[in-house]
Amino acid sequence: MAGRMVVGSAALAGLVRPASAPDPAGGHRILPVRPELTGLLPGRGLRRGSTIAVGAGQSRHSGTISLLIALLAEASRAGSWCAVVGMPTFGVGAAAEAGIALDRLALVPQPGPEWPTVVAALIDGVDVVVTAVPATVSTSVAARLAARARQRGSVLVPYGRWDGADLTLQVVRGAWEGLGPGRGRLRRREVTISAHGRGAAARAKEITVWLPGDELTRVIPRSAAGRSRPGRFRVLTSPDGAERRHE
Image (cartoon, rainbow, N blue to C red):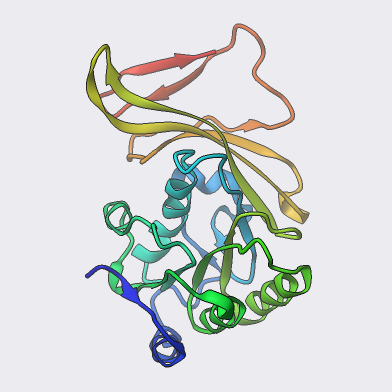
Protein backbone atom coordinates (compact mmCIF):
# COMPACT_ATOMS: atom_id res chain seq x y z
CA MET A 1 0.00 0.00 0.00
CA ALA A 2 1.49 3.34 -1.04
CA GLY A 3 0.25 5.42 1.87
CA ARG A 4 -3.20 6.98 2.19
CA MET A 5 -3.56 9.76 -0.35
CA VAL A 6 -5.89 12.37 1.14
CA VAL A 7 -7.86 14.64 -1.20
CA GLY A 8 -10.65 16.89 0.08
CA SER A 9 -11.98 17.72 3.54
CA ALA A 10 -14.34 14.70 3.66
CA ALA A 11 -11.46 12.27 3.13
CA LEU A 12 -9.43 14.14 5.73
CA ALA A 13 -12.21 13.87 8.32
CA GLY A 14 -12.54 10.16 7.60
CA LEU A 15 -8.83 9.69 8.20
CA VAL A 16 -8.60 11.70 11.42
CA ARG A 17 -11.36 9.73 13.15
CA PRO A 18 -9.66 6.30 12.89
CA ALA A 19 -6.24 7.82 13.52
CA SER A 20 -7.57 9.21 16.80
CA ALA A 21 -8.40 5.72 18.10
CA PRO A 22 -6.13 4.27 20.81
CA ASP A 23 -2.91 2.73 19.54
CA PRO A 24 0.10 1.03 21.15
CA ALA A 25 2.14 4.24 21.25
CA GLY A 26 -0.70 6.60 22.12
CA GLY A 27 -0.22 6.61 25.87
CA HIS A 28 3.47 7.56 25.84
CA ARG A 29 4.63 11.17 26.05
CA ILE A 30 7.83 10.33 24.15
CA LEU A 31 7.64 8.62 20.77
CA PRO A 32 10.74 6.58 19.84
CA VAL A 33 13.33 7.49 17.21
CA ARG A 34 16.26 5.59 15.74
CA PRO A 35 19.01 5.08 18.36
CA GLU A 36 21.53 7.22 16.48
CA LEU A 37 19.22 10.26 16.66
CA THR A 38 18.34 10.07 20.37
CA GLY A 39 21.24 12.28 21.42
CA LEU A 40 19.82 15.21 19.48
CA LEU A 41 16.39 15.20 21.13
CA PRO A 42 15.38 16.21 24.67
CA GLY A 43 13.94 13.11 26.28
CA ARG A 44 15.75 11.04 23.61
CA GLY A 45 12.65 10.93 21.41
CA LEU A 46 9.76 12.91 19.90
CA ARG A 47 7.97 14.60 22.79
CA ARG A 48 4.23 14.86 22.28
CA GLY A 49 3.09 18.47 22.03
CA SER A 50 6.44 19.71 20.72
CA THR A 51 7.35 21.42 17.45
CA ILE A 52 10.55 20.05 15.89
CA ALA A 53 11.53 21.98 12.78
CA VAL A 54 13.79 20.49 10.11
CA GLY A 55 15.59 23.16 8.14
CA ALA A 56 15.41 22.78 4.37
CA GLY A 57 18.75 21.98 2.75
CA GLN A 58 20.38 24.12 0.10
CA SER A 59 19.58 21.44 -2.49
CA ARG A 60 17.15 18.54 -2.83
CA HIS A 61 20.12 16.17 -2.42
CA SER A 62 21.22 17.56 0.97
CA GLY A 63 19.98 14.57 2.98
CA THR A 64 17.19 16.48 4.71
CA ILE A 65 14.41 14.21 3.39
CA SER A 66 16.33 11.19 4.64
CA LEU A 67 16.46 12.88 8.04
CA LEU A 68 12.68 13.42 7.99
CA ILE A 69 12.11 9.76 7.15
CA ALA A 70 14.50 8.67 9.91
CA LEU A 71 12.60 10.79 12.44
CA LEU A 72 9.31 9.06 11.57
CA ALA A 73 10.47 5.47 11.23
CA GLU A 74 10.57 4.20 14.83
CA ALA A 75 7.38 5.95 15.93
CA SER A 76 5.56 4.49 12.94
CA ARG A 77 6.99 1.04 13.61
CA ALA A 78 5.74 1.30 17.20
CA GLY A 79 2.17 1.98 16.06
CA SER A 80 1.90 5.74 15.60
CA TRP A 81 0.07 7.42 12.74
CA CYS A 82 2.08 9.86 10.62
CA ALA A 83 1.14 12.43 7.98
CA VAL A 84 3.14 14.29 5.34
CA VAL A 85 1.67 17.51 3.94
CA GLY A 86 2.77 19.60 0.96
CA MET A 87 5.57 17.31 -0.24
CA PRO A 88 4.46 15.77 -3.57
CA THR A 89 7.87 14.15 -4.20
CA PHE A 90 8.07 12.47 -0.77
CA GLY A 91 9.70 9.07 -1.33
CA VAL A 92 7.17 6.43 -0.28
CA GLY A 93 9.50 3.61 -1.33
CA ALA A 94 12.32 5.00 0.82
CA ALA A 95 9.86 5.46 3.68
CA ALA A 96 8.82 1.80 3.51
CA GLU A 97 12.44 0.64 3.42
CA ALA A 98 13.15 2.72 6.54
CA GLY A 99 10.34 0.98 8.43
CA ILE A 100 7.46 3.46 8.12
CA ALA A 101 4.14 1.59 8.08
CA LEU A 102 2.42 2.79 4.91
CA ASP A 103 -1.03 1.77 6.16
CA ARG A 104 -0.61 4.38 8.93
CA LEU A 105 0.85 7.09 6.68
CA ALA A 106 -1.37 9.88 5.31
CA LEU A 107 -0.17 11.91 2.31
CA VAL A 108 -1.59 15.33 1.39
CA PRO A 109 0.70 16.33 -1.49
CA GLN A 110 -1.14 19.48 -2.57
CA PRO A 111 -3.05 21.12 0.32
CA GLY A 112 -3.41 24.40 -1.59
CA PRO A 113 -4.75 27.51 0.15
CA GLU A 114 -6.37 25.31 2.84
CA TRP A 115 -2.93 24.39 4.19
CA PRO A 116 -3.52 25.73 7.75
CA THR A 117 -6.89 23.95 7.96
CA VAL A 118 -5.44 20.66 6.69
CA VAL A 119 -2.50 20.75 9.12
CA ALA A 120 -4.75 21.69 12.06
CA ALA A 121 -7.15 18.82 11.29
CA LEU A 122 -4.30 16.31 11.12
CA ILE A 123 -2.84 17.59 14.39
CA ASP A 124 -6.18 16.72 16.00
CA GLY A 125 -5.85 13.02 15.19
CA VAL A 126 -2.38 12.08 13.94
CA ASP A 127 0.64 11.46 16.17
CA VAL A 128 3.33 13.05 13.96
CA VAL A 129 2.56 15.67 11.29
CA VAL A 130 5.33 16.61 8.84
CA THR A 131 4.55 19.62 6.68
CA ALA A 132 6.44 21.68 4.14
CA VAL A 133 6.23 25.32 5.23
CA PRO A 134 4.67 27.66 2.64
CA ALA A 135 6.66 30.81 1.91
CA THR A 136 3.65 32.93 2.87
CA VAL A 137 2.92 31.42 6.30
CA SER A 138 2.43 34.14 8.90
CA THR A 139 3.88 34.15 12.40
CA SER A 140 0.38 34.10 13.90
CA VAL A 141 -0.66 31.00 11.90
CA ALA A 142 2.55 29.20 12.86
CA ALA A 143 1.97 30.06 16.53
CA ARG A 144 -1.62 28.77 16.40
CA LEU A 145 -0.57 25.46 14.87
CA ALA A 146 2.21 24.99 17.44
CA ALA A 147 -0.26 25.74 20.23
CA ARG A 148 -2.71 23.23 18.77
CA ALA A 149 0.01 20.57 18.71
CA ARG A 150 0.75 21.26 22.39
CA GLN A 151 -2.92 20.98 23.26
CA ARG A 152 -3.60 17.81 21.25
CA GLY A 153 -0.37 16.00 22.06
CA SER A 154 0.74 15.71 18.45
CA VAL A 155 4.33 16.21 17.25
CA LEU A 156 4.49 18.96 14.61
CA VAL A 157 7.49 18.71 12.25
CA PRO A 158 7.68 21.75 9.94
CA TYR A 159 10.04 21.35 6.99
CA GLY A 160 11.50 24.78 6.32
CA ARG A 161 11.92 28.02 8.25
CA TRP A 162 9.83 28.02 11.43
CA ASP A 163 10.51 30.62 14.11
CA GLY A 164 9.82 29.62 17.69
CA ALA A 165 10.25 25.85 17.29
CA ASP A 166 11.15 23.89 20.42
CA LEU A 167 14.01 22.31 18.46
CA THR A 168 15.48 22.88 15.00
CA LEU A 169 17.48 20.19 13.18
CA GLN A 170 19.66 21.03 10.19
CA VAL A 171 21.86 18.91 7.91
CA VAL A 172 25.04 20.98 7.77
CA ARG A 173 27.39 18.66 5.87
CA GLY A 174 27.08 15.52 3.79
CA ALA A 175 29.07 13.18 1.57
CA TRP A 176 28.01 10.11 -0.41
CA GLU A 177 29.79 6.76 -0.25
CA GLY A 178 29.86 3.99 -2.83
CA LEU A 179 31.39 5.41 -5.99
CA GLY A 180 34.84 4.20 -6.96
CA PRO A 181 37.10 5.42 -9.81
CA GLY A 182 34.71 5.25 -12.74
CA ARG A 183 32.30 2.72 -11.26
CA GLY A 184 30.08 1.80 -8.31
CA ARG A 185 26.77 3.15 -7.03
CA LEU A 186 25.67 5.54 -4.32
CA ARG A 187 24.89 3.44 -1.24
CA ARG A 188 24.54 5.82 1.67
CA ARG A 189 25.36 9.32 2.81
CA GLU A 190 27.42 10.47 5.79
CA VAL A 191 25.72 13.56 7.20
CA THR A 192 26.37 15.91 10.08
CA ILE A 193 23.20 17.12 11.80
CA SER A 194 23.07 20.12 14.10
CA ALA A 195 20.40 20.71 16.75
CA HIS A 196 19.51 23.84 18.68
CA GLY A 197 16.39 25.02 20.44
CA ARG A 198 14.85 26.26 23.66
CA GLY A 199 14.74 25.04 27.24
CA ALA A 200 16.25 21.58 27.53
CA ALA A 201 17.46 21.90 23.91
CA ALA A 202 19.22 25.26 24.39
CA ARG A 203 22.68 23.68 24.24
CA ALA A 204 23.65 23.19 20.59
CA LYS A 205 24.68 19.69 19.50
CA GLU A 206 26.04 17.93 16.44
CA ILE A 207 26.20 14.29 15.45
CA THR A 208 27.50 12.49 12.37
CA VAL A 209 25.48 9.52 11.09
CA TRP A 210 24.85 7.45 8.01
CA LEU A 211 21.61 8.11 6.10
CA PRO A 212 20.22 5.69 5.14
CA GLY A 213 21.47 4.12 8.36
CA ASP A 214 22.03 0.64 9.69
CA GLU A 215 22.09 -1.06 13.04
CA LEU A 216 25.91 -1.01 13.24
CA THR A 217 26.30 2.74 12.78
CA ARG A 218 28.46 4.35 15.43
CA VAL A 219 27.45 7.92 16.24
CA ILE A 220 29.95 10.52 17.42
CA PRO A 221 28.13 13.36 19.28
CA ARG A 222 29.91 16.70 19.49
CA SER A 223 29.07 20.14 20.78
CA ALA A 224 28.36 22.51 17.89
CA ALA A 225 30.29 25.18 19.75
CA GLY A 226 33.47 23.13 20.17
CA ARG A 227 34.97 21.49 17.09
CA SER A 228 37.35 18.55 17.26
CA ARG A 229 40.89 19.60 17.96
CA PRO A 230 43.51 19.25 15.19
CA GLY A 231 44.91 15.75 15.00
CA ARG A 232 41.85 14.13 16.57
CA PHE A 233 39.77 11.68 14.53
CA ARG A 234 36.12 10.72 14.48
CA VAL A 235 35.65 7.01 13.76
CA LEU A 236 32.57 5.68 12.01
CA THR A 237 32.01 1.95 11.60
CA SER A 238 30.54 0.65 8.36
CA PRO A 239 28.32 -2.48 8.11
CA ASP A 240 31.21 -4.71 7.07
CA GLY A 241 33.13 -3.74 10.22
CA ALA A 242 35.66 -1.56 8.41
CA GLU A 243 36.51 1.71 10.09
CA ARG A 244 36.81 5.06 8.37
CA ARG A 245 38.65 7.94 10.03
CA HIS A 246 37.94 11.59 9.48
CA GLU A 247 39.85 14.60 10.72
